[in-house]
Length: 593
Image 1 (tube, rainbow, N blue to C red):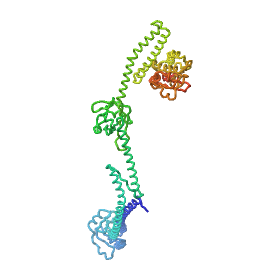
Image 2: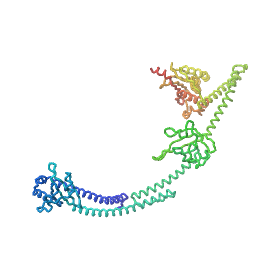
Image 3: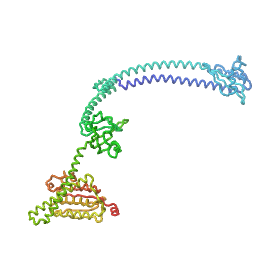
Image 4: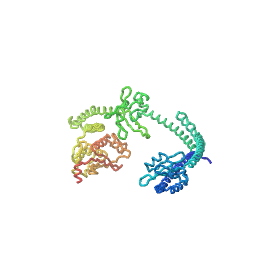
């Protein structure tokens, strides 16, 4: 039967426990003997106290015969060597014998002085003999005393014998315990030493040997677990190498710092942008690599309470003094308890993005100065021709002028839309808010779009209103949103269609709903309706889509005003756009009342 590590350990512990048990037994016997000795002493003290009580009357009458009888009885008690009664001067009256050779002898001075001043027992030890002296008083006057000698020799001998036997047993069991421990230690440490040697090999960077699993006990399980660990370690090492290659080849800059900002790790992208090696960057403070964002003392001071930040723009400082604009994200690494936390900084070079944005700005500026101004002049000139300033142009001439006027207006709307879209993107759009009634603004928007509807033989029907409802908006911008939605409904309606306009209250908002009976929005295009320059490829849409900016601008404007725009659509069943705007608080409360 194979004994496992647990069984061997139990055997080892049992041997140790037995050895200690013997020692503890000896100690217990010793303590017990001490208690018996103490009890023996107490019995001697109690005996003399009892004798002193009994001899009081006889001592007062100097009845020597009675005293001799009492003392004689006392001497017959176990372990009593002898006993005497003495008078107030310390002279022995009787020792319990008829001959009484001690008669008229004095007890020692120390005992006489003690009984003269104290009622307490005087206990003296001499080897294995205990001498106890007690004075006897009557009416507070010393009339004599009793002196008793008590033997403890027999108990001491028994104690010595028992102590020797117990010590011998303890030595035997101690030797057996040590021997068992040595054998068990050898059996246990041999396979453990193999594990230690293999672990040391791993720590030195060597290949870990495969351990032999010789037993099915816990040591065998340890060897098997070690083999599994080394297998996974090899896999982890391969994975770690893979991750390291990924980090080194990633385009974004990766920096790991301690909580105090000291850099502990960088990747190749950081070294390339900073113009420094990894050895030069590790150990430096991240404040030497990244400029502190505006309003913060350092990069790490920009962290939120959760220990992270995203989309923070700052500059990466190179060793040559060049500054690279970067978009930074920082996150705190989870660390095991007791280890200091670290931060992972990912920085993306946005130089190209900023360059592109500058090009867009230059393009917008060019449109504003090089296109819009001459376009206005061209449109004015065409308008004059259309008005007859150059005389009768003939039917063909009038058609050409009308076409040119339409296209110039379309071009002007495109330029205006691009400029408005860009202002909204950069937050440069100015809003002048006023509290006013909603319905006049709806009426103005319908009136402004009516001519466009007439061109397409489409009319508007305002069949639901909200009289007295007031909103706080920039009226020009709000009308721009409504005209974009109304124009969009006309563009996708057929000749003779009616665009329904409804105004009502909905969840604390005032809603303007514009419903057409057009082809509906294709499924794959619905997520792009409010994106700039979005155009569907379907045949029903290809020739009807505008610049692709109107709905994007409308969404941005209405959201700036605190509202929202949404739609419901059905392919072949038309589309309803909903413009929601908060109702003025004061008027909404009065309306609810």
